[in-house]
Image (cartoon, rainbow, N blue to C red; front, top):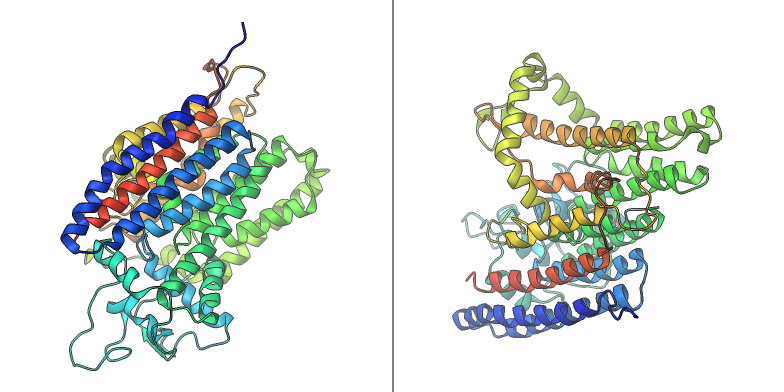
Length: 538
Protein backbone atom coordinates (compact mmCIF):
# COMPACT_ATOMS: atom_id res chain seq x y z
CA UNK A 1 0.00 0.00 0.00
CA UNK A 2 1.39 3.43 -0.92
CA UNK A 3 2.55 5.50 2.02
CA UNK A 4 0.64 8.77 1.86
CA UNK A 5 2.78 10.48 4.45
CA UNK A 6 5.02 13.19 3.08
CA UNK A 7 7.59 14.74 5.41
CA UNK A 8 6.65 18.31 6.16
CA UNK A 9 2.95 18.01 5.41
CA UNK A 10 1.99 18.19 9.06
CA UNK A 11 4.35 21.03 9.95
CA UNK A 12 2.92 23.06 7.13
CA UNK A 13 -0.34 22.98 9.06
CA UNK A 14 0.84 23.75 12.56
CA UNK A 15 3.90 25.95 11.96
CA UNK A 16 2.43 29.23 10.68
CA UNK A 17 -0.85 28.58 12.52
CA UNK A 18 0.88 28.40 15.92
CA UNK A 19 2.87 31.54 15.14
CA UNK A 20 -0.39 33.34 14.29
CA UNK A 21 -2.13 32.19 17.48
CA UNK A 22 0.79 33.16 19.68
CA UNK A 23 1.07 36.43 17.80
CA UNK A 24 -2.51 37.33 18.68
CA UNK A 25 -1.87 36.32 22.28
CA UNK A 26 1.05 38.72 22.61
CA UNK A 27 -0.97 41.41 20.86
CA UNK A 28 -2.67 41.80 24.24
CA UNK A 29 0.66 42.94 25.71
CA UNK A 30 1.27 45.31 22.82
CA UNK A 31 -2.22 46.74 23.34
CA UNK A 32 -1.44 47.31 27.02
CA UNK A 33 1.71 49.17 26.00
CA UNK A 34 -0.24 51.33 23.54
CA UNK A 35 -2.84 52.20 26.17
CA UNK A 36 -0.15 53.21 28.64
CA UNK A 37 2.11 55.13 26.23
CA UNK A 38 -0.37 56.32 23.62
CA UNK A 39 2.01 55.23 20.85
CA UNK A 40 -0.33 53.65 18.32
CA UNK A 41 2.51 53.13 15.86
CA UNK A 42 3.32 50.02 17.90
CA UNK A 43 0.26 48.36 16.31
CA UNK A 44 1.67 49.04 12.84
CA UNK A 45 5.12 47.77 13.75
CA UNK A 46 3.75 44.68 15.41
CA UNK A 47 1.47 43.93 12.45
CA UNK A 48 4.43 44.18 10.09
CA UNK A 49 6.47 41.92 12.37
CA UNK A 50 3.67 39.38 12.60
CA UNK A 51 3.17 39.25 8.83
CA UNK A 52 6.94 38.98 8.29
CA UNK A 53 7.27 36.18 10.86
CA UNK A 54 4.48 34.23 9.21
CA UNK A 55 5.99 34.90 5.80
CA UNK A 56 9.41 33.53 6.76
CA UNK A 57 7.85 30.37 8.22
CA UNK A 58 5.84 29.80 5.02
CA UNK A 59 8.91 30.47 2.83
CA UNK A 60 11.05 28.16 4.95
CA UNK A 61 8.42 25.42 4.83
CA UNK A 62 8.17 25.67 1.05
CA UNK A 63 11.96 25.52 0.63
CA UNK A 64 12.37 22.68 3.13
CA UNK A 65 9.52 20.39 2.14
CA UNK A 66 8.22 21.32 -1.28
CA UNK A 67 11.28 22.65 -3.09
CA UNK A 68 13.66 20.32 -1.19
CA UNK A 69 16.26 23.07 -1.49
CA UNK A 70 19.82 22.66 -0.28
CA UNK A 71 20.67 23.62 3.29
CA UNK A 72 22.88 26.50 2.21
CA UNK A 73 20.18 27.99 0.03
CA UNK A 74 17.59 27.79 2.79
CA UNK A 75 20.08 29.28 5.24
CA UNK A 76 20.76 32.22 2.92
CA UNK A 77 17.05 33.09 2.91
CA UNK A 78 16.27 32.39 6.57
CA UNK A 79 19.55 33.74 7.96
CA UNK A 80 19.14 37.05 6.13
CA UNK A 81 15.44 37.67 6.78
CA UNK A 82 15.40 36.41 10.37
CA UNK A 83 18.50 38.52 10.98
CA UNK A 84 16.73 41.59 9.62
CA UNK A 85 13.77 40.95 11.93
CA UNK A 86 16.09 40.58 14.95
CA UNK A 87 17.87 43.74 13.81
CA UNK A 88 14.53 45.53 14.03
CA UNK A 89 13.05 44.04 17.21
CA UNK A 90 16.33 44.36 19.13
CA UNK A 91 17.38 47.72 17.68
CA UNK A 92 20.85 49.24 17.30
CA UNK A 93 23.20 49.45 20.30
CA UNK A 94 21.17 46.91 22.28
CA UNK A 95 23.67 44.04 21.89
CA UNK A 96 26.49 43.45 24.41
CA UNK A 97 29.20 46.14 24.13
CA UNK A 98 27.62 47.27 20.87
CA UNK A 99 28.19 50.96 21.53
CA UNK A 100 31.98 50.41 21.56
CA UNK A 101 31.76 48.41 18.34
CA UNK A 102 29.65 51.18 16.79
CA UNK A 103 32.26 53.80 17.70
CA UNK A 104 34.98 51.61 16.20
CA UNK A 105 33.04 51.23 12.97
CA UNK A 106 32.25 54.96 12.88
CA UNK A 107 35.94 55.81 13.18
CA UNK A 108 36.80 53.47 10.31
CA UNK A 109 34.00 54.95 8.18
CA UNK A 110 35.63 58.38 8.57
CA UNK A 111 38.94 56.90 7.41
CA UNK A 112 37.23 55.37 4.38
CA UNK A 113 35.65 58.74 3.54
CA UNK A 114 38.91 60.62 3.98
CA UNK A 115 37.58 62.63 6.92
CA UNK A 116 39.05 63.23 10.40
CA UNK A 117 38.52 60.10 12.48
CA UNK A 118 39.80 61.09 15.95
CA UNK A 119 41.49 63.96 17.75
CA UNK A 120 44.99 64.01 19.23
CA UNK A 121 43.82 62.20 22.36
CA UNK A 122 42.15 59.42 20.37
CA UNK A 123 38.56 60.58 20.92
CA UNK A 124 36.43 59.61 17.93
CA UNK A 125 34.68 62.24 15.86
CA UNK A 126 30.98 61.81 15.05
CA UNK A 127 28.53 64.12 13.31
CA UNK A 128 26.65 66.50 15.56
CA UNK A 129 23.35 65.18 14.23
CA UNK A 130 24.29 61.72 15.54
CA UNK A 131 25.03 63.02 19.04
CA UNK A 132 21.64 62.02 20.47
CA UNK A 133 22.56 58.35 20.00
CA UNK A 134 25.45 58.65 22.45
CA UNK A 135 23.96 61.18 24.84
CA UNK A 136 26.12 60.27 27.82
CA UNK A 137 29.25 59.69 25.76
CA UNK A 138 29.95 63.19 24.52
CA UNK A 139 32.38 65.73 25.82
CA UNK A 140 30.37 68.27 27.85
CA UNK A 141 29.64 71.33 25.74
CA UNK A 142 30.45 69.57 22.45
CA UNK A 143 27.28 68.85 20.52
CA UNK A 144 25.08 70.06 23.38
CA UNK A 145 24.32 73.53 24.77
CA UNK A 146 26.88 74.63 27.34
CA UNK A 147 24.56 74.73 30.32
CA UNK A 148 27.24 73.93 32.86
CA UNK A 149 25.39 70.74 33.73
CA UNK A 150 26.85 67.30 33.23
CA UNK A 151 25.85 65.49 30.05
CA UNK A 152 23.27 62.78 30.55
CA UNK A 153 24.10 59.09 30.61
CA UNK A 154 21.60 57.54 28.23
CA UNK A 155 22.69 55.62 25.14
CA UNK A 156 20.08 54.57 22.62
CA UNK A 157 19.13 50.91 23.03
CA UNK A 158 21.38 50.12 26.00
CA UNK A 159 18.28 49.29 28.01
CA UNK A 160 15.43 48.41 25.69
CA UNK A 161 12.17 50.08 26.61
CA UNK A 162 9.19 51.42 24.75
CA UNK A 163 11.00 54.76 24.73
CA UNK A 164 13.65 53.22 22.44
CA UNK A 165 11.01 52.33 19.86
CA UNK A 166 9.45 55.79 20.24
CA UNK A 167 12.78 57.53 19.65
CA UNK A 168 13.45 55.50 16.51
CA UNK A 169 9.91 56.17 15.25
CA UNK A 170 10.03 59.89 15.94
CA UNK A 171 13.54 60.53 14.65
CA UNK A 172 13.40 58.30 11.57
CA UNK A 173 16.31 57.53 9.27
CA UNK A 174 16.52 60.95 7.61
CA UNK A 175 18.95 63.80 8.25
CA UNK A 176 18.45 65.58 11.57
CA UNK A 177 21.07 68.34 11.48
CA UNK A 178 24.38 69.41 10.01
CA UNK A 179 27.58 67.43 9.61
CA UNK A 180 29.73 69.38 12.05
CA UNK A 181 31.99 67.00 13.95
CA UNK A 182 31.98 66.54 17.72
CA UNK A 183 33.96 64.12 19.86
CA UNK A 184 32.80 61.26 22.03
CA UNK A 185 34.43 59.93 25.17
CA UNK A 186 33.51 56.37 24.19
CA UNK A 187 36.71 54.54 23.32
CA UNK A 188 36.93 52.25 20.27
CA UNK A 189 37.88 48.60 20.58
CA UNK A 190 41.61 47.95 20.19
CA UNK A 191 41.52 45.24 17.56
CA UNK A 192 42.00 44.70 13.84
CA UNK A 193 40.04 47.17 11.67
CA UNK A 194 39.02 44.20 9.52
CA UNK A 195 36.49 43.36 12.23
CA UNK A 196 34.58 46.57 11.42
CA UNK A 197 35.04 46.87 7.67
CA UNK A 198 31.51 45.87 6.66
CA UNK A 199 29.87 47.92 9.41
CA UNK A 200 32.03 50.91 8.43
CA UNK A 201 31.06 50.52 4.78
CA UNK A 202 27.40 50.60 5.78
CA UNK A 203 27.92 53.76 7.84
CA UNK A 204 29.96 55.34 5.04
CA UNK A 205 27.22 54.65 2.50
CA UNK A 206 24.66 56.17 4.86
CA UNK A 207 26.78 59.28 5.32
CA UNK A 208 27.17 59.65 1.55
CA UNK A 209 23.41 59.32 1.14
CA UNK A 210 22.83 61.98 3.77
CA UNK A 211 21.01 59.71 6.20
CA UNK A 212 20.63 60.55 9.87
CA UNK A 213 22.07 58.67 12.82
CA UNK A 214 19.34 56.02 12.89
CA UNK A 215 19.89 55.32 9.21
CA UNK A 216 23.62 54.87 9.79
CA UNK A 217 22.94 52.42 12.61
CA UNK A 218 20.72 50.21 10.51
CA UNK A 219 22.97 50.26 7.43
CA UNK A 220 26.01 49.40 9.54
CA UNK A 221 24.22 46.48 11.13
CA UNK A 222 22.91 45.31 7.76
CA UNK A 223 26.43 45.29 6.30
CA UNK A 224 27.63 43.08 9.15
CA UNK A 225 24.68 40.71 8.73
CA UNK A 226 25.18 40.38 4.97
CA UNK A 227 28.85 39.50 5.43
CA UNK A 228 27.94 36.84 7.99
CA UNK A 229 25.28 35.27 5.77
CA UNK A 230 27.62 35.21 2.76
CA UNK A 231 30.52 33.66 4.71
CA UNK A 232 28.39 30.99 6.39
CA UNK A 233 26.58 30.23 3.12
CA UNK A 234 29.93 29.50 1.48
CA UNK A 235 31.10 27.46 4.46
CA UNK A 236 27.87 25.45 4.54
CA UNK A 237 28.18 24.84 0.81
CA UNK A 238 31.63 23.32 1.33
CA UNK A 239 30.73 21.20 4.34
CA UNK A 240 30.77 17.49 3.36
CA UNK A 241 28.44 16.65 6.27
CA UNK A 242 26.83 18.33 9.28
CA UNK A 243 25.14 21.12 7.31
CA UNK A 244 21.98 20.74 9.39
CA UNK A 245 23.94 21.08 12.63
CA UNK A 246 25.61 24.31 11.51
CA UNK A 247 22.22 25.57 10.30
CA UNK A 248 20.70 24.77 13.68
CA UNK A 249 23.38 26.65 15.61
CA UNK A 250 22.83 29.59 13.28
CA UNK A 251 19.14 29.53 14.25
CA UNK A 252 19.80 30.06 17.95
CA UNK A 253 18.21 33.38 18.95
CA UNK A 254 21.51 34.43 20.51
CA UNK A 255 23.35 33.76 17.24
CA UNK A 256 20.80 35.69 15.20
CA UNK A 257 20.86 38.59 17.64
CA UNK A 258 24.66 38.87 17.54
CA UNK A 259 24.94 38.56 13.78
CA UNK A 260 22.44 41.40 13.31
CA UNK A 261 24.49 43.81 15.44
CA UNK A 262 27.67 45.91 15.19
CA UNK A 263 29.54 43.39 17.34
CA UNK A 264 32.73 41.82 16.07
CA UNK A 265 31.21 38.56 17.35
CA UNK A 266 29.53 38.50 13.93
CA UNK A 267 32.89 38.19 12.19
CA UNK A 268 34.19 35.77 14.81
CA UNK A 269 31.22 33.45 14.28
CA UNK A 270 31.32 33.75 10.49
CA UNK A 271 35.06 33.08 10.21
CA UNK A 272 35.05 30.31 12.82
CA UNK A 273 32.27 28.49 10.99
CA UNK A 274 33.99 29.07 7.65
CA UNK A 275 37.38 27.85 8.92
CA UNK A 276 35.76 24.73 10.38
CA UNK A 277 33.87 24.02 7.16
CA UNK A 278 36.93 24.38 4.94
CA UNK A 279 39.01 22.13 7.20
CA UNK A 280 36.33 19.42 7.21
CA UNK A 281 35.91 19.71 3.45
CA UNK A 282 39.64 19.29 2.87
CA UNK A 283 39.78 16.41 5.33
CA UNK A 284 36.74 14.42 4.21
CA UNK A 285 35.42 15.88 0.97
CA UNK A 286 37.90 17.43 -1.43
CA UNK A 287 40.29 15.25 -3.40
CA UNK A 288 43.31 17.45 -2.75
CA UNK A 289 44.32 20.69 -1.06
CA UNK A 290 44.69 23.59 -3.48
CA UNK A 291 46.89 26.64 -2.96
CA UNK A 292 43.84 28.88 -2.74
CA UNK A 293 42.50 26.71 0.09
CA UNK A 294 45.67 27.31 2.11
CA UNK A 295 45.55 31.03 1.35
CA UNK A 296 41.90 31.12 2.47
CA UNK A 297 42.70 29.38 5.77
CA UNK A 298 45.61 31.77 6.37
CA UNK A 299 43.49 34.84 5.59
CA UNK A 300 40.67 33.67 7.84
CA UNK A 301 42.99 33.04 10.77
CA UNK A 302 44.78 36.37 10.25
CA UNK A 303 41.44 38.17 10.51
CA UNK A 304 40.03 36.01 13.32
CA UNK A 305 43.05 35.82 15.62
CA UNK A 306 43.39 39.46 16.70
CA UNK A 307 39.71 39.71 17.65
CA UNK A 308 39.75 36.84 20.13
CA UNK A 309 43.10 35.08 20.25
CA UNK A 310 41.59 32.11 22.11
CA UNK A 311 39.96 30.89 18.91
CA UNK A 312 43.39 30.31 17.39
CA UNK A 313 43.00 26.85 18.92
CA UNK A 314 40.73 26.06 15.96
CA UNK A 315 43.87 25.90 13.81
CA UNK A 316 44.24 22.41 15.26
CA UNK A 317 41.41 21.31 12.95
CA UNK A 318 43.93 21.52 10.10
CA UNK A 319 45.60 18.41 11.51
CA UNK A 320 42.53 16.40 10.46
CA UNK A 321 43.58 16.89 6.83
CA UNK A 322 45.71 13.96 5.57
CA UNK A 323 49.25 14.88 4.57
CA UNK A 324 48.83 13.11 1.23
CA UNK A 325 46.18 15.61 0.16
CA UNK A 326 48.85 18.34 0.21
CA UNK A 327 50.97 16.37 -2.25
CA UNK A 328 53.65 15.49 0.28
CA UNK A 329 55.13 16.43 3.65
CA UNK A 330 57.06 19.38 2.28
CA UNK A 331 53.89 21.00 0.92
CA UNK A 332 52.14 20.20 4.20
CA UNK A 333 54.86 21.95 6.22
CA UNK A 334 54.85 24.99 3.95
CA UNK A 335 51.06 25.24 4.25
CA UNK A 336 51.21 24.98 8.04
CA UNK A 337 53.92 27.66 8.18
CA UNK A 338 51.83 29.99 6.02
CA UNK A 339 48.74 29.68 8.24
CA UNK A 340 50.77 30.07 11.45
CA UNK A 341 52.74 32.98 10.01
CA UNK A 342 49.59 34.80 8.96
CA UNK A 343 48.15 34.39 12.45
CA UNK A 344 51.41 35.36 14.14
CA UNK A 345 51.91 38.44 12.00
CA UNK A 346 48.37 39.64 12.69
CA UNK A 347 48.85 39.12 16.42
CA UNK A 348 52.13 41.05 16.44
CA UNK A 349 50.62 43.93 14.49
CA UNK A 350 47.47 44.21 16.62
CA UNK A 351 47.87 42.54 20.00
CA UNK A 352 51.58 42.50 20.86
CA UNK A 353 51.22 45.09 23.64
CA UNK A 354 48.23 43.33 25.17
CA UNK A 355 50.02 39.97 25.19
CA UNK A 356 53.14 41.48 26.74
CA UNK A 357 51.09 43.22 29.41
CA UNK A 358 49.24 40.10 30.56
CA UNK A 359 52.32 37.89 30.34
CA UNK A 360 54.57 40.20 32.31
CA UNK A 361 52.28 41.73 34.94
CA UNK A 362 52.93 40.82 38.56
CA UNK A 363 49.93 42.70 39.90
CA UNK A 364 46.42 43.05 38.54
CA UNK A 365 43.57 45.47 39.25
CA UNK A 366 39.95 44.88 38.19
CA UNK A 367 38.50 48.31 37.63
CA UNK A 368 34.81 47.50 37.72
CA UNK A 369 35.17 45.73 41.11
CA UNK A 370 37.80 48.16 42.46
CA UNK A 371 39.79 45.17 43.70
CA UNK A 372 43.00 43.38 42.89
CA UNK A 373 42.69 40.51 40.42
CA UNK A 374 44.43 37.35 39.31
CA UNK A 375 47.63 37.29 37.26
CA UNK A 376 48.83 34.60 34.90
CA UNK A 377 52.02 34.13 36.87
CA UNK A 378 50.17 33.78 40.15
CA UNK A 379 47.78 31.21 38.72
CA UNK A 380 50.61 29.15 37.24
CA UNK A 381 52.37 29.11 40.60
CA UNK A 382 49.21 27.78 42.28
CA UNK A 383 47.71 25.30 39.77
CA UNK A 384 45.59 23.53 42.41
CA UNK A 385 43.75 26.73 43.25
CA UNK A 386 43.30 27.49 39.55
CA UNK A 387 41.76 24.06 38.94
CA UNK A 388 39.49 24.58 41.93
CA UNK A 389 38.25 27.87 40.50
CA UNK A 390 37.56 26.25 37.13
CA UNK A 391 35.77 23.33 38.77
CA UNK A 392 33.54 25.55 40.91
CA UNK A 393 32.78 27.76 37.92
CA UNK A 394 31.57 24.87 35.77
CA UNK A 395 29.37 23.55 38.59
CA UNK A 396 27.80 26.89 39.46
CA UNK A 397 27.71 28.58 36.06
CA UNK A 398 27.06 25.64 33.72
CA UNK A 399 23.33 26.28 33.44
CA UNK A 400 23.91 29.97 32.78
CA UNK A 401 26.41 29.13 30.02
CA UNK A 402 23.86 26.83 28.40
CA UNK A 403 20.97 29.29 28.45
CA UNK A 404 22.98 32.33 27.38
CA UNK A 405 24.49 30.34 24.53
CA UNK A 406 21.04 29.75 23.05
CA UNK A 407 18.85 32.68 24.03
CA UNK A 408 18.88 33.93 27.62
CA UNK A 409 19.70 37.55 28.45
CA UNK A 410 19.39 38.96 24.96
CA UNK A 411 19.89 42.66 24.35
CA UNK A 412 22.60 44.21 26.51
CA UNK A 413 22.67 41.18 28.85
CA UNK A 414 19.08 42.04 29.75
CA UNK A 415 17.66 39.41 32.10
CA UNK A 416 14.10 40.27 31.03
CA UNK A 417 14.69 39.61 27.31
CA UNK A 418 14.82 35.83 27.53
CA UNK A 419 13.79 32.98 25.28
CA UNK A 420 11.38 30.72 27.23
CA UNK A 421 13.29 27.88 28.86
CA UNK A 422 11.14 25.26 27.18
CA UNK A 423 12.36 26.53 23.81
CA UNK A 424 15.97 26.50 24.98
CA UNK A 425 15.57 22.85 25.99
CA UNK A 426 13.74 22.04 22.74
CA UNK A 427 16.45 23.60 20.59
CA UNK A 428 19.11 21.75 22.55
CA UNK A 429 17.36 18.43 22.00
CA UNK A 430 16.84 19.30 18.34
CA UNK A 431 20.56 19.95 17.76
CA UNK A 432 21.46 16.68 19.46
CA UNK A 433 18.91 14.72 17.41
CA UNK A 434 20.29 16.16 14.18
CA UNK A 435 23.73 14.93 15.24
CA UNK A 436 22.59 11.32 15.54
CA UNK A 437 23.08 8.80 12.74
CA UNK A 438 20.09 8.37 10.44
CA UNK A 439 18.88 5.15 8.75
CA UNK A 440 20.53 4.14 5.52
CA UNK A 441 24.15 4.44 4.54
CA UNK A 442 25.03 7.60 6.45
CA UNK A 443 28.73 7.64 7.30
CA UNK A 444 30.37 8.32 10.65
CA UNK A 445 33.35 10.32 9.40
CA UNK A 446 35.28 10.91 12.61
CA UNK A 447 37.37 8.08 14.03
CA UNK A 448 37.69 7.74 17.81
CA UNK A 449 41.12 9.41 17.75
CA UNK A 450 39.80 12.29 15.68
CA UNK A 451 36.87 12.76 18.04
CA UNK A 452 39.21 12.88 21.01
CA UNK A 453 41.34 15.45 19.20
CA UNK A 454 38.31 17.65 18.45
CA UNK A 455 37.10 17.34 22.05
CA UNK A 456 40.55 18.42 23.22
CA UNK A 457 40.50 21.45 20.91
CA UNK A 458 37.03 22.48 22.08
CA UNK A 459 37.98 22.01 25.72
CA UNK A 460 41.16 24.02 25.18
CA UNK A 461 39.19 26.78 23.47
CA UNK A 462 36.66 26.92 26.31
CA UNK A 463 39.43 26.80 28.89
CA UNK A 464 41.38 29.60 27.23
CA UNK A 465 38.20 31.70 27.09
CA UNK A 466 37.57 31.18 30.79
CA UNK A 467 41.22 31.81 31.67
CA UNK A 468 41.19 35.12 29.80
CA UNK A 469 38.18 36.29 31.81
CA UNK A 470 39.72 35.02 35.03
CA UNK A 471 42.73 37.27 34.43
CA UNK A 472 41.00 40.27 32.88
CA UNK A 473 37.62 40.45 34.67
CA UNK A 474 37.55 38.42 37.89
CA UNK A 475 38.52 40.01 41.25
CA UNK A 476 40.69 37.92 43.57
CA UNK A 477 37.86 37.78 46.12
CA UNK A 478 35.73 35.69 43.77
CA UNK A 479 35.89 31.91 43.94
CA UNK A 480 34.47 31.50 40.42
CA UNK A 481 35.26 33.06 37.05
CA UNK A 482 33.10 36.08 36.24
CA UNK A 483 32.18 37.59 32.92
CA UNK A 484 32.03 34.41 30.82
CA UNK A 485 28.91 34.15 28.66
CA UNK A 486 27.56 31.20 26.75
CA UNK A 487 27.92 33.02 23.43
CA UNK A 488 31.69 32.63 23.73
CA UNK A 489 31.28 28.90 23.07
CA UNK A 490 29.30 29.26 19.84
CA UNK A 491 32.32 29.40 17.45
CA UNK A 492 33.31 25.78 18.16
CA UNK A 493 29.88 24.37 19.00
CA UNK A 494 29.03 23.01 15.49
CA UNK A 495 32.15 20.84 15.17
CA UNK A 496 31.75 19.64 18.76
CA UNK A 497 28.17 18.51 18.13
CA UNK A 498 29.20 16.81 14.89
CA UNK A 499 31.37 14.42 16.88
CA UNK A 500 28.30 13.02 18.66
CA UNK A 501 27.34 10.94 15.62
CA UNK A 502 28.08 7.28 16.34
CA UNK A 503 27.13 3.73 15.38
CA UNK A 504 25.46 3.01 18.73
CA UNK A 505 22.47 5.36 18.49
CA UNK A 506 20.68 5.27 15.15
CA UNK A 507 17.38 7.09 14.65
CA UNK A 508 14.60 5.28 12.81
CA UNK A 509 13.70 8.29 10.65
CA UNK A 510 15.43 11.41 9.44
CA UNK A 511 13.57 14.41 10.86
CA UNK A 512 16.31 17.02 10.40
CA UNK A 513 14.21 19.27 8.18
CA UNK A 514 11.27 19.13 10.57
CA UNK A 515 13.57 20.12 13.45
CA UNK A 516 14.97 23.06 11.48
CA UNK A 517 11.45 24.15 10.58
CA UNK A 518 10.47 24.01 14.24
CA UNK A 519 13.45 26.23 15.11
CA UNK A 520 12.49 28.74 12.41
CA UNK A 521 8.92 28.86 13.72
CA UNK A 522 10.25 29.20 17.27
CA UNK A 523 12.22 32.27 16.19
CA UNK A 524 9.05 33.76 14.72
CA UNK A 525 7.41 33.37 18.11
CA UNK A 526 10.47 34.67 19.99
CA UNK A 527 10.49 37.84 17.88
CA UNK A 528 6.81 38.53 18.59
CA UNK A 529 7.28 37.88 22.30
CA UNK A 530 10.36 40.12 22.55
CA UNK A 531 8.56 42.97 20.81
CA UNK A 532 5.62 42.66 23.20
CA UNK A 533 7.97 42.71 26.22
CA UNK A 534 9.71 45.88 25.06
CA UNK A 535 6.34 47.50 24.29
CA UNK A 536 5.18 47.21 27.91
CA UNK A 537 8.46 48.40 29.43
CA UNK A 538 7.24 51.96 29.79
